[in-house]
Picture: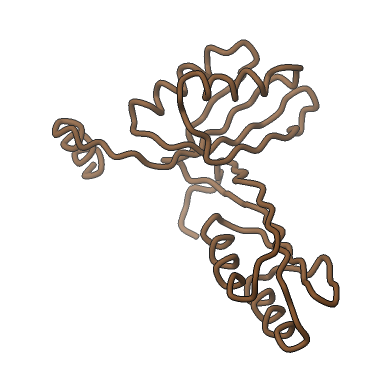
Length: 180
């Protein structure tokens, strides 16, 4: 209740805050569906922080997870526009829902004989896996929340990150609603 009152107060004062939103979109797995959705964001001038797409349990339906920024009015506009697209089945802003999220990152780090054990200790702490090794590098795979991925990258930067590839967020609404 207090959150609603604060939101109404902020809107009245013109202080509505831009924040990250995670939007889950179910679309028909048809040629051009991805382009229409990405094109909508581009045409309206909305930025996409991350975008992931993949098939669902039903082969003819794909799930897109879009992370974008905006105030309530912009996100409402994005949601309405997405719902108008012909291939769209369902649009859900997960931001205010309880949801499970994960990102995947592959990080190639410079390593020496002296630094290798320290890098592997960091990997162990973050439950990352070594997926490739050479005399001069270690490549790690880590999964977790955006914050966890940011944290492992920050911990490995002092060793020299040579390359990095990140998936962006995938998310599903959490079904369990009680205390964990």
